[in-house]
Image (cartoon, rainbow, N blue to C red):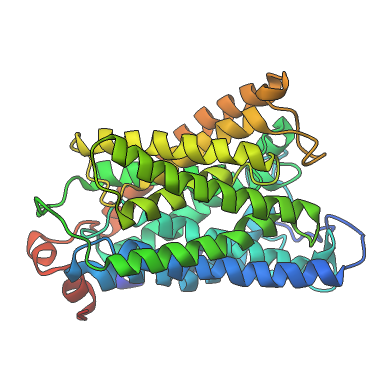
Length: 433
């Protein structure tokens, strides 16, 4: 019976969606669809989708050999399950008509089963394209969390958890941050491409998961990643796809997209080198894994700032994020927190650093829709970002902890000690590398 629980949840929520009155959602703009903008967003959507397989290689290469397939599948399966949820009602929860005027959630009926998405524009692109672009963000967010509980979670229970996560954590944060009637949007919080919605939510959920599931029974004293070549390949795919993630968030083929592309690659390069040099200063040898982690941390940190800061500022964002995340990794390693692949130090902390530095370096000279940051003599934006950081952190961490408990009651989260010893590839999927 428990095998059918994920499908039962989907069916119940779909039925409940009909309880909401039908709406015809006015498009965000009456501007005619622009062919160049549409072409760029089609490309960007494909680029962002590539990030999830990239993440699968990035995470899969770091775990023990007996858990490579299971770890990679946890990323790949999001492309299936989250797509279905998004098409049925997820996009509506995130970008549908605001419910109750609170700026917290959209009406699940607004775009139910992708209605009201054909023949109308969203800005200068089709609504259906915007929905598919945003889908890829929703797909990779729960996949990011998997690195925290790698090597010890039951696959069926994982499906239940990510279903609940998308509905009750991701969608409300996306609505509050990016919808014109969203609470954080109206407050003036800037998040260009998901530092808050994607990385902070995943990072805090990862920390909650590591604490809830507790340590692995078997932690090798000297763990050697299964495939460092996978890690390098995954990093390359992530970096490549991130241009769609950030530059695509300009929603057009324009100068802002060009700036976001430039700040993205610069911050990542700066973070990769900063991570290497920081390791050398600590007496460690420069490593391929360290360089790859640093590059990803830079990508994470620049995400909220990509379309609001200058290229020179992006250098600082990358360097600061790399050093801070490296220090948090060191701290985490001295605790009993078994965040297997350091998702919280890299994505959670990287996202928070990026959010705060957006409040420092944002400038209207880059994006007139933004604001002036602390560096330019204004304190308002930075204070707003501090408030939002605390609110999002509490919501994501506490919310994820509650969802983990609910999932555990429905279907046990942890594999048995014997299944963990054998490895999740065999115990969960009857497959071997």
